[in-house]
Each structure stands twice: as structure tokens, then as C-alpha cells.
Image 1 (cartoon, rainbow, N blue to C red):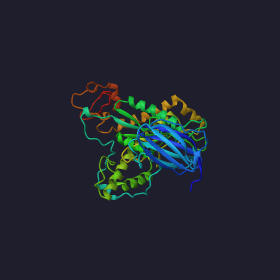
Image 2: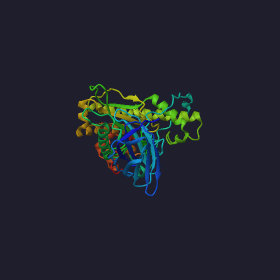
Image 3: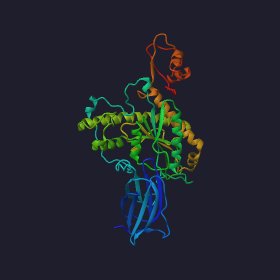
Length: 442
């Protein structure tokens, strides 16, 4: 049984694909929710609840919500009505208190209806035990991560590299909060926007932000968005916190082997969701052993790529300042669990450290962090260009070729061509393969 509780306030966040309404309550409550058409409304009946003040109005609007009304429908039932701008399907749930908030009733509204298990997933970690590797894997060709496996294309069909940038937290999840009330969700969004602007300027690259404003999206939904855009790399940006305010420095994480094993068990258990996760190869028509082998090999390739780009990123951050650890770290973060996209999580600094909190608030330092990240991205893809991308153009040297002639042919500068290939002189060997640096019009 739920005890009587008061509704104290309402908070609302409008995301591109849904609107979240959060009611703060003095205790846990049960509720019934239903929709009404013409005009479109969502009705929430809450037995045993009342407004904390008889004159209080739970007023808010935005996204799919035109207005919110509340009144006692009967002496022991509080009725809340969400007037909508258009028809929507709700998903509601109760959240227990955490370090930031007390009890909450959350209403997520989706215009096209919620994909309840994916779009609104706020769970932390996937369930599932460790799945052992099978020796039969030696006889199977390892698939490449899907975003990196591309068919050979003509120059006119070359595509941009897609960099998915994920600002952590958002909306009613502020993340860590510093002594000066700096919220993690705000600083990481600012850094992410700066990084996106730098990626946009890079020839042959295109950024995708998992969130572009102050709203929350589920952890797996962030991965889904990256996959929908066929991302070649996923970077989640955060700010660390620790009870010891002296802790400092940035860190770079990739998925742990244990986290990869639990994710493989989850995917293998969900056959209908396992298609196209191993380099474009559907697992639906494979037997259990082959599915396990293919997924294991795909994860191995993705983890190796993740480690490589994370190493580049950590090296650039070390040039910027102190790092918390000298090596790439591993953890089971949900946002790192895509089997087909190299993924890393950057803890930019400790927001719990007053000195680092002030740096995180500083626009110049945010820009330096973004520049360190783009340098790491550029260095990695300069050495590992995915086939079919604009950064993967190549030329095989023929007799009579000169470096300057090749530069003119591909409309790149001689210095860029020399530097992109690490050449110390202009002497060329017939049959050697040169990588052509991308340009804005290539």
C-alpha cells in the first residue's frame, strides 16, 4: 500500500523524439494513466494524493505538452491533465529518491508511441553472464564493425566519416554537481557542441550529437542513434566526481571484456534485435554456435579499434594537462556496449575538484578539450581510414609520377600530401600506395 503523498512541483524537458514530464512527490504513489482524444489529452489519476498547496498549479509547457492542469477529482483522488499539442502515447513509471531528487512520477510522451524497451530505457547495465569463447572461431573470418565495413565505391560515392558525440546526462539527470553548483550535464553539452563544430570543419567528417539540448535520452537509445547514422566512432563525454576533492585529471575508457561478455549474452538472447550487428551480417538465420562466434569476433575487432583510438585520445589529453591514469581504462558503461561501433568514454576532469570545476566552466578550456579530442580522432583515422570514405582515398605510384603532379591531380597541397603520408622527401617508389588527404570537395 502507498501512503498519502503530496505533489510538490513539475519539471518538463522536450527532446526531438519525446517529451518528459516529471512530478516531484513527497513519497511513492500509485497512479492510473489514460488518453483522451479531441482534444488530445493525457489523464493521470493518483489515489491518496493532493497538491502540496491548495492554490498550487502544476504549470509547465513545451514539446508535446500545451499545458498542465491539476485538481481534486474526488476527495481522495488527484487528477492531473496534460493538454497536448497533438496525439501522443505515454509511458509512465515511478523513480525512487537518489542523491539529487526525492520520489518522482515520470511521464514520457512519444508522438509515434514508445518503443518501451529501447527508447525509454534508463536501466544501468544489461543482464547476462559471461559467455565463453569457442575455439571454432579460428575457422571463421572476423567481420569488421558494421560502420567500418563498406563496399568499394567510386570517387563520386565516397562518404563522410560519421562521428557520434554523446554529451552525458541531460534533463532531469544533471550528472555530478561541483561545489560551485556547476552541473555536469551543462559543461559536457558545451564541450560536445565545440567538438561537433571542429568535426564539421574537418574535410571528410560529419558530426552527430546524441542530444542537442537539455533533455535526457536513454543509454541504449544513444547507441541506437549512433547506429542509425552509421557512425564510425562513438564518443561519450562526461565529467568525473569523487568524494576526495583532491582527485583530478582526465581519463579515457573503453568497454571491459566482462562488459563485452555480458552484452554478447544479452544480444544472443534477443534474436530479433541481433540483426546487422556484426558487420552487416544478419544473425537471424545462424545457429547458436555460429551466432556466438560471429558476435565474439565482431566485438573483438571493435574493442581493438576502440583501444587504438582511445590511446590516441589519451595521448592528446596528456599534452593538455594531467590525466588521472596513464593508460586507457576499461569499464562496463552501457554506452560503450555497441558490438559494431568503436566506442570510448572521456572523463574530461573531476568536477568535484574545485580547481578543475573552474576550468570546466571556462570556455577556453572547453575549446582546448575539444581540440585535444579532434586531434585524437584525426590521428586515428589518418592511420586507419575506413574503406569507402573520403579519408580513405589512395593512389598507386606509377613510373614518371612526381609528388607535386599527384598533389595537383587530387587538388591537395604538396605539404598536406607529404605530411599525410609521413614522407621526409619527395622521392617516390613505383608501386607504392599514397593516401590522399581529404578536401572539402573530395
